[in-house]
Image (tube, rainbow, N blue to C red):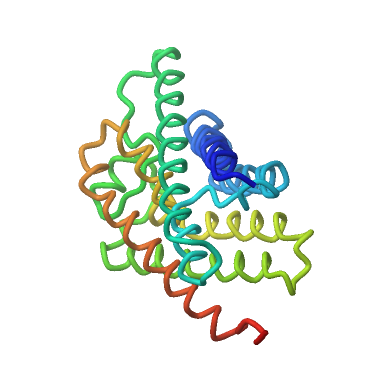
Length: 235
């Protein structure tokens, strides 16, 4: 498959992930469970829709972990990153347009990620916890690590790859159920930046670094760990 096709698929897929997941969080009134399911369902849909084109990474951390694991070149990874960030930011802009057209006023947190008492207060919801910066980093790093371990295992040619999309989507759903009350769940730098750019909450951009760095660290650890857990067969 040509790299141009892969880039278009990643851009479209990441656009849908942010539009579907963050759009549900902003407009759905379905609670944490509904939002978690929305993110999981978008991944499942794109896994089977464009997985045969690009692998449906939809996430710079996933591409980073796949590269660390030796399954793609650094050039391809960087091109995936460009596509993913563009798709996510365009989706964020579309969500902003919908928000403004509905006359909802200031965007507030706007489904951005965050931590601490300021984030908890900005959400206006008692269900959110005032987790510390260190705690947020641990949560995002650990959950991204688990996410990548599932992805690398489910897409391993030695595995039943036909069920990969379902396994990955359900894992992302569980990840959101754990961490929405803590950080609003990132495990995806593109998703985090796309919402922080359009949030009116003044902590969104200053805190977004954590939701870029922690997922990348977790993904890198998973990429290395999977080599130890399931080493490639010697040819």
